[in-house]
Length: 287
Image (cartoon, rainbow, N blue to C red):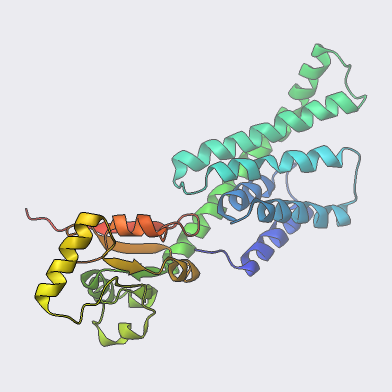
């Protein structure tokens, strides 16, 4: 699912307003915004821009201060961690990245306070004293990062469930999706998907790679020749599938002749759309 611009704008406004509203020290969504933006934005520059804009807008009201450069730099570390989260999901991946974001901000900013200010002696003892003094603020930060990370990633997961964009390249799967009442999620189909009738209005995302208007014997001969030579049986319109901002691409792995297979999709590059998208393959079984 591609994130619309209005959502990025909303996150920038949220970050700025959360820093301006009364709150415990360091209890802000900045680490969560950076982590989310880094993991979900198509370009790293989008995550960087969203984080910096939220900081700059709020600091324009609060007032700029000495050491602002290292605070901004430390706030961008979560964007980097977010890039490592791309194409991954679940608390097992997000929680360590969120914790690392909080810890890196604490380590960097406290070290720079010690190194650039005169509040603490420039000794190991002074450095330890600086970090000890920052622990109450760090506790607030961890709590804020945890809350906002859950809210940001959890809220987006709910949004994705309500706005999943499906391309079905398997006729039976298309019928099942519609029978489950999720037909409005379909944005593309295969050349064989024609039931219910209204799906024929959807863009065609696949087609036979050879003339199928000939006799069944000629089709069989051509299929066997293509299988031996490794030539594709289907054309996959990979660019169209990406333009449709596909979240879920449905194929089948039971028969390499009957319909589009995961191998066809992999060769076409169609299953490399936005982060978080998936390719599902159906295979019948008997119990």
